[in-house]
Image 1 (spheres, rainbow, N blue to C red):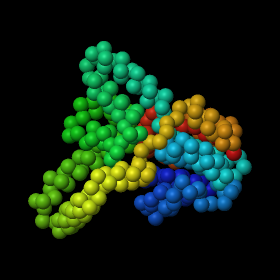
Image 2 (cartoon, rainbow, N blue to C red):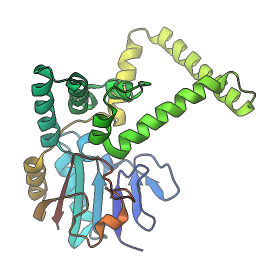
Image 3 (cartoon, rainbow, N blue to C red):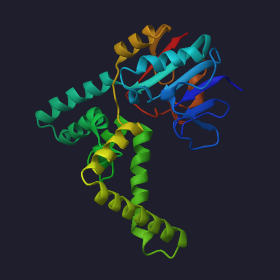
Image 4 (cartoon, one colour):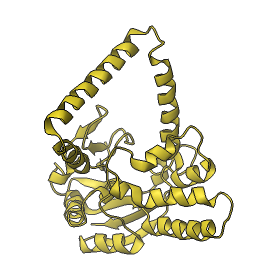
Length: 278
């Protein structure tokens, strides 16, 4: 078994690795709150990897998390960090701003989407935010641009929205007992939420917002190649450098298909990939 560690893995994990997430969705994924540290002794792993995790830590907490990653690595071990690339997103925003303000056809939609990509996940107050609302449209006017920006992850969200619309359309006309039971439970949960809202009044909205902001979905900070490289160096890593999705200090990295798909496409385009050695 490889002494490789995947932190905040979500549904993308490798069999034979140690996979940890805040909530487990698979028997091979260990549930653990990473804000409390990494539950392994020092000098345990050859590799620690996390993708689109660091931006969910407050800026003040990020250094401690990276030092914790360093602690569990063996001497010479590698940390690979993947985050949304602020530089890439900001460049796309400036281009969209220029083209939309010049009246180029279709760039009003592209501008709207890039603004959401840049800012929505930092300020959203409900799951998915305005970005999810955009992707839930039955017809997305700039679908090619959206898929180029978001890759497989966004394609999956769009496909799930379509499946959800189909389930909703069939739910009440179906004789399937399971679907009817699901509908009943969903309505029952809504009833309890309404009761809680009546009891708490305005405090209910504060409770819901606090619960959501603490759950971990919002982005609490953003990084570019300069700031993330500096942060890893300050956490004690050496040989810090930026890589592409398929390149790494680890041999045959692309074969793990964590940053790429089986067909070679990038899972989350416009991400930033930085590695350092202990």
